[in-house]
Image (cartoon, rainbow, N blue to C red; front, side, top):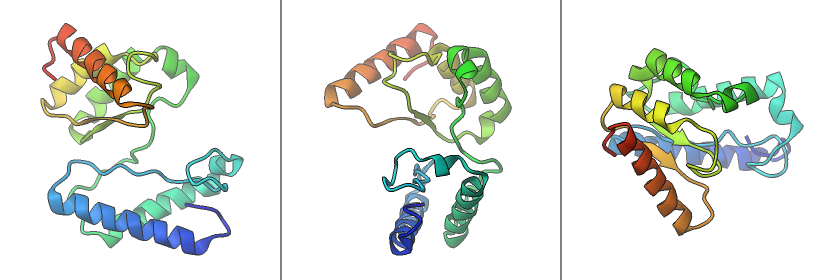
Length: 170
C-alpha cells in the first residue's frame, strides 16, 4: 500500500509482490517476507493513517488478493503480523513467546527477528529458541535491516551463543 494518490505505484508494488510470492512457491521457500507499506508518502514510513481500521482492512484484502493470484500450497489460517506489539509484552516476553510458540508452533514456518539487533534489545531469545527447537530443528530465523556486515556477524554470534546455552544447535 503505497501513497493513497499513486494508484500506478500501488499496482506495480502488488505485481512485484505477486511475482515474488510465485518465485517463493516455485523454489519451495518456507516463507516469503514482505511489508504492507504505508498510507503516507514514504513507502515504509510511519503515518497516522496506517493505524486506522480501514487501513487494516485494506491490508487484509491486499494480502488475500496477492495470495489468491498465486497458487500457494502453504496457506496460513492466521495473519502473520508482528507478535510483540505492546510495551507490556516487550518488557516481559519470555512467557508470552513460550505460550505463542506452543499454541501456533506447527503453523510457524519462519521467524523474522526484527529488533534493534539481537542481543541489544529485550527479546528473550533463550525462551524463543528453546520453544522453536521443539517445533522444528530447521526453523528459518531472519535478521535484516542492520547497519553493517559487522552487525550481522555480531548478531549471528550472539544467537549462536544463546542457542548453545540452551542446547539448541544453530
